[in-house]
Length: 107
Image (cartoon, rainbow, N blue to C red):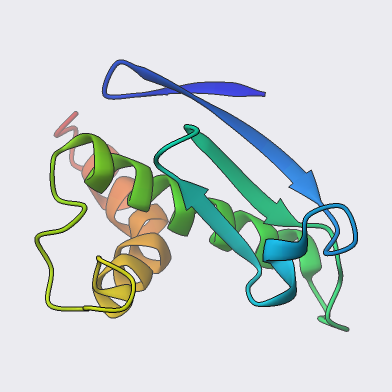
């Protein structure tokens, strides 16, 4: 699957940690250099794994937006380049924010 993030095409794929060794350390990632987003297919015994995958995908899409906005290295999180707490907050709250904006006709 392909998606445009601020005009830049990113590929989205779902892989197991066996297929993509980077997923042995995380459940998803956004690679700015290759313009790809990858989310795990390995169910960690979660009750609603599809819901979790969607949350992971939103999280990585937020990273892509930050990369394409020029904010990749402008955060205080020295190890990763972007503040994971803020990215996670955005990914978790985005559906709720969209719902409220739609309800009030602000789109």
